[in-house]
Image 1 (spheres, rainbow, N blue to C red):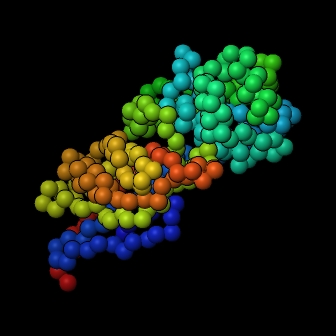
Image 2 (image 1 turned 30 degrees about the vertical axis):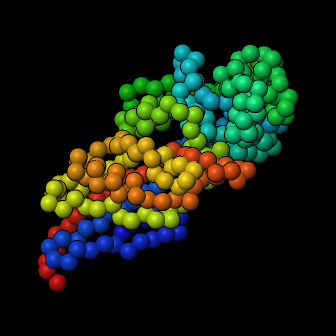
Image 3 (image 1 turned 90 degrees about the vertical axis):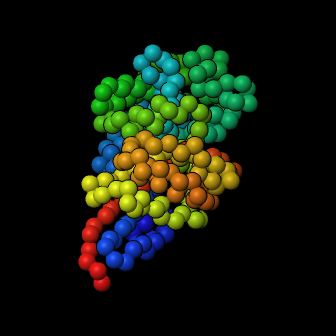
Length: 285
């Protein structure tokens, strides 16, 4: 069975009559690949939203998070987008400035989030966006966990609250973010829509090149272009070379309705796709 999470499409299983029943499950699940991880982030955002409400600010902006050296990294941008979106959904008594609007505003003046450490750049951003506080984030990564130190500061630099959040971080997640060096958008975050599959046939099972022990998941990281094509496909978790190739070639033929930003503009996005191969033997009919 082929299941597209985030859409209403449900494709019937493919079947090769005779010795073998084959199925491929596709998951386009956004970046929070597991329900428990989604729940942890949601709970952390709810706690943080309650603390922000008590600080009596009216509108916050969440810039890209930095690593411990102060550098802006792709993982920091993703986590900032994640928590900005979750805080927007859980805000009580305060608003969250849209990050895409803020980034476009900064770009018009030749600036990025990196420039907000300068008082004049921060003051102008805050004034034009109507924000009265900035939620900074510092990301720490060790072998199997990522930690975010949050700091909410007003426009004078006074710290209004501090908070810490930690989650597990696996190798495939690390590969996704370390390999992405572009200022890309993330499907499902910052008001960006998730691309919808228009033509997504099941990637072929490499018959004769595998066995039941090869059942499992191929994790891909894909750029969905403004034309709705799957490009820059990378394997972030391999199953077997033959299965990896089959998954890549299958997804390369797909066509999507492209993602859109909050203003309805078509934009390219990066997103994970999981192709799960299952095989079980069955007798002849």
